[in-house]
Length: 180
Image (cartoon, rainbow, N blue to C red; front, top):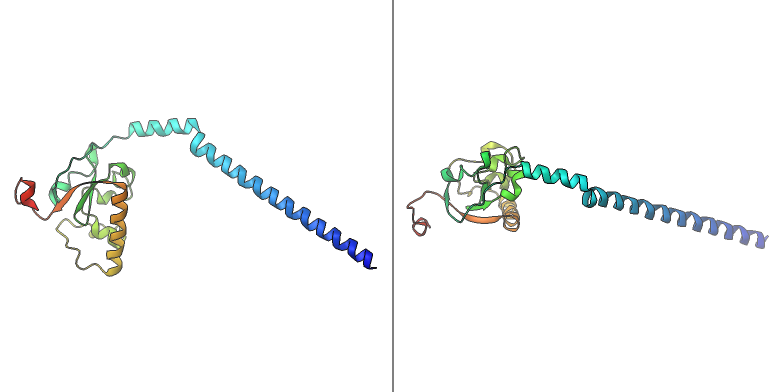
């Protein structure tokens, strides 16, 4: 009896090991296939890359913005429409966001921030047009959570976009040093 039980135990162990091996081999094969498909469509699909390049050529480029300071009214012209430069102000710093034109340019999800001070809307994580003001906003009524959120957005802008100037409450003079 003991020998029969021992043989059954070995058969069960062998069966479990065979099933586990088959499961592992199948899993590895599926992961490999998924990686190969991803690689083909993302990196190696020459036809797809050509189409993307054609789309990029059709998209109007936004001219770079040289260093300067902006009033709210002057910033409005930098909205990316009709090939205009594309800028967004965040906590009184103006960024050239042309590299993110698919987000901030015409038709993008954050288009309402283009050529504007987006600080309040970003701090509140809001797409409500009322949170993008046309008047100077000192942001003093933001909650601590909103202030932290705004700081996170500032870090993202610092990493992705070029600073091109400051947002001025009003222009005192054409001399940049007098506007500080």
